Image (cartoon, rainbow, N blue to C red; front, side):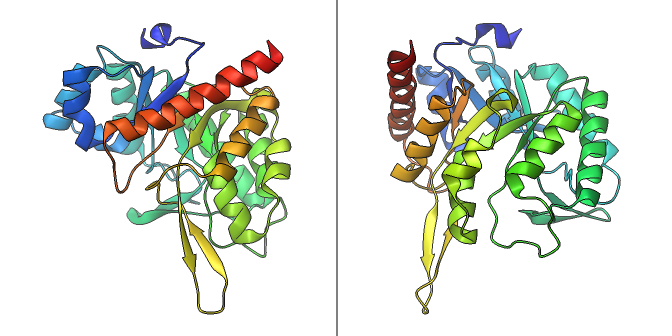
Length: 285
């Protein structure tokens, strides 16, 4: 199985995007694994799937979904689950993940990952959908904390508490997106370090690192946008180091989805991540 090829001592991967397919096939860069968005490969044929089939001979894969809409009040899309299960059967990903969000209303998909209110009702809906997904796929899934720009007045949980409770109820793990923690903490006035400290390390199955952009308005207020289009900032690196100090030792992904640079730039971020891991190992080895 592909997971057996993953070196537990060097667990840094990169989000594989279309501009780099040819480079990866021709150069076989020294990357431990790649992550792809599941929905881009639901079609049984086509050039993208053909290229991914060639790449997966050399690299373990992780599947990251953006369209299952676990937080929708309606039933899960059975066709989506069938397509995902077929993709898992074909590519044997070592990780499968989705988002703490919703995007589907009566069969119409909205082009964003929308936040859910953190209430008991939402908790039950999400827990049921995660249970159904894991039972159908016969695999554990990871749930990613979102980047958000609004909060619901009806919420009775803090996001970190909600996500932790959800995973404890379902046996799912957390995909801890550290950039999302930082983005949401600035947008809502949270303490990012306290958020991270409240996450039980044993529940974390993967980490995402990425960049974001700043928007400043006429009144001087600012908003961070999670666009994955720039280098990882110092504050996110600091939070990543905090996660390592907490004892979190899981595969870590470099995400870069807009303004996609050359692969050499991605490799610089990979090397920084490996240095953080190595330094933490020296401190606690």
